[in-house]
Amino acid sequence: MATYTWDKPLTVEEGETASLTTTASYLALKPGFDGVIMYSASAWRRALSPALIHVLYYKASTGVFTSYRIEATDRLATTHVPLDGMATDDYLYLGFSAPVLGIYIDMGSNVNVNAATLDVEYCSVAVPGALTFTDVSGDSDGTASAGVTLAVDGVYTWTLPTDWVRSTLGTSAVPLYTKCYWIRFNPSATLSATVGLNEIIPVYKNASYGYHEAATSYINQLDRTRNGGFALLGTGTQTLNVTWLRHG
Image (cartoon, rainbow, N blue to C red; front, side, top):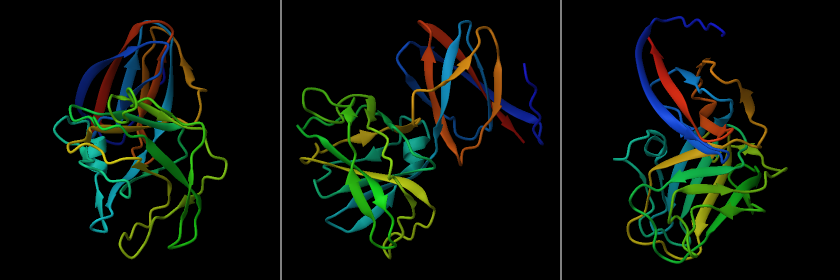
């Protein structure tokens, strides 16, 4: 087992478990921690998800952008990204540190009940002040149930665009100059009055997850500017022990 050295002493550790199966599951990084130990008695696989750098809700009726990145990444059930009554001309913008194959959405308790689909677009041309967004292809909405999007927890995936460009979103209304890989989505019909996205986890760009041996502890330092969580696979049905580490 490799030994990692931090420049500050260990001050806090917290643990949780994750259930692994042959279907991918998603685990967001725990805020405030800079390291992790992962262990399973059986072999398992893992990919690091890119970081979710920006979460911006654009309300067309007011022309206002509101940031909800903290609410989307804090892993708290008491906070969420509010899409209450989201109209067809409203948009949720998501900015990633690297291209992603989709997003896992934990809906929490406030789900959509109105019949609607999501239109997801990516930034294909980056001209300052005039970005071009193009529909994703091959998309599959795992949050949909009986024609209702954002009705259940699930992963929304698409075919990885070959012309996805890294850009700023910067406008006079939104002075965002951090370069990201942007997507945006809006609904085909107005969402129900109370809708909240409890958590959003980016999905790694392909299925070539790393292999991890059975009965071995893996210790890693974390960089939250580049990674936002993990995509996890088991070789059967098994438990993954996760210990979060904080130094300094």
